[in-house]
Every structure is written in C-alpha cells, then in structure tokens.
Image (tube, rainbow, N blue to C red; front, side):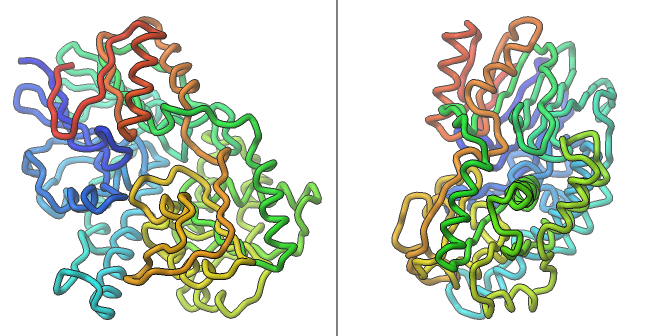
Length: 454
C-alpha cells in the first residue's frame, strides 16, 4: 500500500497548514494550523476533518505560529489523544500561544455578544483557554537532528528552519519513502534568527511559498524603520505597530534598541510592548541561545527596551497618553487581540502612523490597511483611517523566492516530486514554475482536500 498525503490546509493559501500522511491504516498529521484571513477560509475551522481526530495517531509541528499549530487544541477537544511532537522551542511557545488563542476567542465572542454584531446567537469560541490548557500535556519535545519514532515503523527528524524560535523542517520516513516538510523557512540574513539548516535528501518535498513570487529589498529593516519613526515622532504622533507576538515583536524591539543606540532615534522615545504573549515570548530568547543571533546582552536589552504591558487596565491606560510613542501589539495581521483597540483609537488621526511588519494574508485587516483603504472594520463598525500607513518590506521572517530556491539547491540530489504549499495561488504557481524550469524538477500546487502519492 502506497504512502499518501492529503492536503487539508496550506494548499493554494498561506494559512491553515495541515498535511495528513497515511500508510496501511496509520495516520499522522504534519502541522495542525488554524485558517486565518478571508471569512470563507476561517469557516473551514468549523468544518469537521475528513478523518475523525481519534483516528489520527500522531501530530508533528513545524513551528508554533497559529496557522501551523493553533488547531491542535480543537483536535484534542474533538478526540485526539496521541502525542504532538515539536522542538523544545515550539513546545515552549505553544504553552504561551494556545491558551492565549483560546482566551482571545472567548473575549471576541463575549464582545460580539455584548454588542450584538455577530450573526450567531450566541457567538461561540472555536475553543476556550481551558481547552487549550487541556491539550498542552499532549506536547512532547524533541531535539533537533535526533531521530524519533512517532508511530512504530515511522521515523521523523527535526532540523532547524530559522524563522522563529523552534521552527523546524521535518524529514519523515515511512515505508521506504522520505518526505521533507520545509515548514516556514527563515531568511539567511534575518536580524535575529539563525539561518535554516540545509535541506536533507528526500523523495518528496513540501516547500512553503509565502514569498515565492518576490525578492526582499536589499535595504535592511533599520534603514526602513528609522525614517518612519522619525516622521511620526517629529509630528508628535503615535506609531501603532501590529506585530506577530512570536518573532517580529522581538525583531522590532531589537531594531528600535539599535536605532536608539546609534542615535537615529531619541532614547527618550517611549516604546510599549502591549501583548502578554509577546512579553512572555521575549523572555524565552534567554532559554534558547543556540537558535538566534542575539548575545546574552542583546536578550537582556530586549526585556528592557520597552515598557512591558501585561494587564488590560495598563493597555487601556495607553489611550490617555499623548505622543510621540510607539505601541507594538499583537496580532501581526490585526486579526484580533489588543492591537484592534489601538487601531480603533489612533487610526483616525493624521499625525499617527500604522506600521505593518510582515506578510498580510488576504482578507485580514492588515491587508485592508496595506491597500490604503479609507476605512477598516473593527468590532462591528467602520473605523476611518487617516493615519499614515507604512509597510516594512524588509521585516519579513520568511525566505523570499531566491532564498527558497537556494534552500532547495542544498539537497544532494533531485527529489521525485515537489509540492508547493503554504502560499497564495499566484506566489505558489510562480515558485512552481521556477522549480520546474530552473531545477528541472516535477512540481505541482495541490488543491485543498486533494490526495497525492509520495
């Protein structure tokens, strides 16, 4: 019986990554992510999987971002009781992200019910904070480069992928087939993360394509960020920075610290990190020194370079302050969390600035802001946008098209098949074409729900 992969997410879209590998009645899920962005994508989170969760034997996570791990609490809630294997960094981050995700869903549902803007009565969370806490014992940490046996006869090896703490590429070996899952690959020149390991030999490769259609600018994030914050500070404005609590929050904190040390920003410019999840993640960098470029002094500076905002009351109190100041707050695509309240409060003033720091999936508020829309819908109403919108082109934590191709070229020999995943249809197809024409390898962009051989 052949080994097959069913693409339950991350197929012609940059969200909801789930890859079901099956062989002789055994089933393993690589990544277990939430769909984000367009409503029609988010609705997929509520649809049952084609395989009952209690018939999945194990889960392997490439990294902790919710579009790769955030469905796990729901999987456990609906009957999965196997192991969720992840690197130590991913395990530590999931302990922060999953309960926070459940809490935000509960808050959003409660807010919708209080203000009556949900079409459902009552609005319900996909899962709660308690559901997430109940799922955490399923996590089992594994070391990089150590072979594990998630299912008898199946082997898996996690290799560092850069991108964020704990991010991994995974080589799965089953029935004589070697299947390589790239996960989200980091940039070789990332400001804080180490570069990805080279690709091991495999028969089948699943390669992400978030930025498969573009090349990052040569300008670094410091050169982009400095003039933007200088403009905002000069006019006494507030810079609201939606950040991914894991990775970009720390990179931006480090960048602002460096700019202050270089004298390009006033050391008196107040900076606030308004995300308990980002605050907790920032402290994790000290626990994983081998995975990033930051020195011990740099990691200590991260926790001192901003006022750490934890409580809701502290967050609300920021609204009574006057600029100039910088507020970094999650989520990075403005899909939920405290940043929505800051956007609601500050977006209408032309002195203020909204700085977008990474990929903005279609259908998210971040994508709406990036399109220079005059209004953005927050908490059931249209909020006027007069603030200056700045999109940092150099702040992404994803490898670009050339870097993805360079990673594939590190494989000792050509694989039999490449599946281009975790990218919108356009970028995915452009990367597919490059793989076919530049490398001469077979490559396809699989459709959602399709099953392919390995």
